[in-house]
Length: 487
Ligand code: GLN
Image 1 (cartoon, helix red, strand yellow):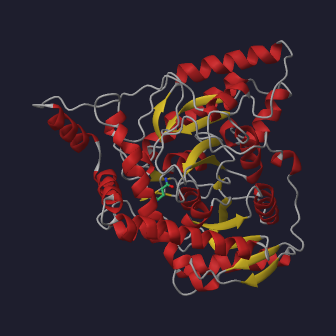
Image 2 (tube, helix red, strand yellow):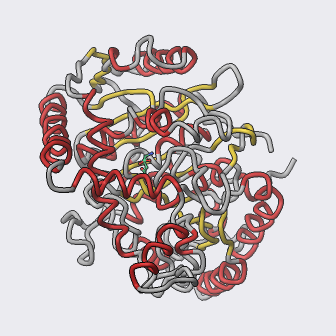
Image 3 (spheres, protein in one colour):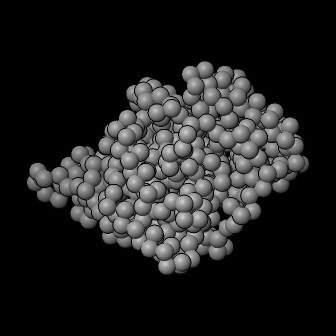
């Protein structure tokens, strides 16, 4: 049986293209057809740019016919989370506020992907302004999980994870402020990397919480994750928080083998506290890597109970400030029936933002207001500082921390929408990496009793993405690759 084009990984598509066995236009058409067939079930995409994609594919084919140099990402179709600016494409951030907003410029990651001759296919669905853990708060409707379309895809980069898992695109670019790449990757059986804070430029990413936001890849295998990371990482003058290194070489340096790697496991954080299947499969994962040569050691994270509250205070505080720009004057939506400028602001923001975004803005404004600032915001910042210093000293003794990505698997659509605090609990293991700036990866480590994917998470020292990728690659190779949903 001939394998469908959409089933290939990105690195395979690129070599088939370079060898002249497939042209970029064929590859692009295959993925566009796949989107036509499955997206009505999933709602991964907010917008698909067929003509744009086919025109870039033609240009790339021409480049090959002239024997011009081609990158390792050339001809690879890529989907972009809808909070990253692509010139000439809509950027809704999953919100009514930006329903018809068209980006006038490219994010730095987009310029990098364009110069690598990848093919941008369209914009992926997400929780409104990246606030959420289920991709249900999107103005454009919930994203559905490819393993069970009655369940959520995880969030906020749910469109990225569902789209990649269902082979609508081999690669997606998402953002992760408190787990938004890793959580949906774990719910949809994909691989998601949140790079070290500053390793990937955020120029052109719509700011949610600027001290935590990172851009990163979501893919179906570790090789593609390494490959994509190499093409988006590195210094950028246009992001003042950007790191100083030029770029990475994780794909070429990817190695199987984890002998002697010291893995710290904070058992207290999850033992007996999470879905039993998640715990069982995660522990089998630990046994598997131990067999492969890793040294498992018990660690304590004494500051971890502060992580989730600190995250929600800090991220909401920053969001309330970042989102003040959406006032109906300069961007997007404006209510049409108002009496004066104050009334215009009120009606625009009341009608333009959804419930969850309004909740965060109110929470953020509250914790920053005089009288409460010291009690909440400063306290949260101090807690984050303590978590950071505890992790710093732990990381001197071990190589990586291993944790489940989430306490449970994908839940039913609507199940947690009425209980925000319960929804926030999904982020309990992911926010640690954001608060500390450390890189973290999530990849599949089994399935639960309903056949839903479970994710394992590894956190490494700053700028040690290579170790995360090598470990995930070793495990992936050992289990013979990650499964795919039937659709
Ligand atoms: N689920 C978290 C939140 O709702 C994280 C979101 C994100 O990483 N963008 O804030």
